[in-house]
Length: 119
Image 1 (cartoon, rainbow, N blue to C red):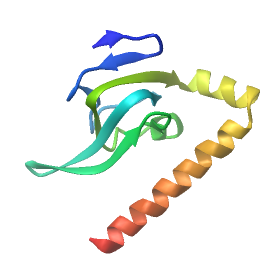
Image 2: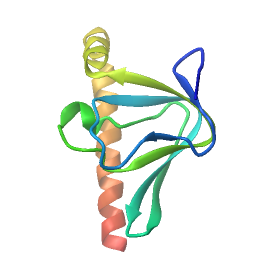
Image 3: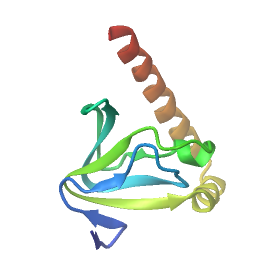
Image 4: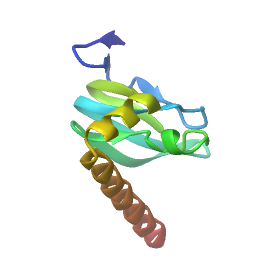
């Protein structure tokens, strides 16, 4: 892993967060893509691919639960880490950030429900 202009550059396949570990920050994909996977027995299931400009790991800022999935780089990916204090400061400066965060969370919940019904 190397440090980029913004965030950290993770090489292809590098784990950024691991399912079951505690979390205390969220991440923004500055460049490249990451995949979200969940272990199912001895197999993995891809839940999502997150591209540049989007975020993941936000649930750790609102809950004290363990990470619900593993996220790893798909190709080289530059990822910025944001802790709770930094996020709250940014929301104070730009309240629309909170609205965009909620819209994304709502969309992900809706998609997760659709996936459960389809399974």
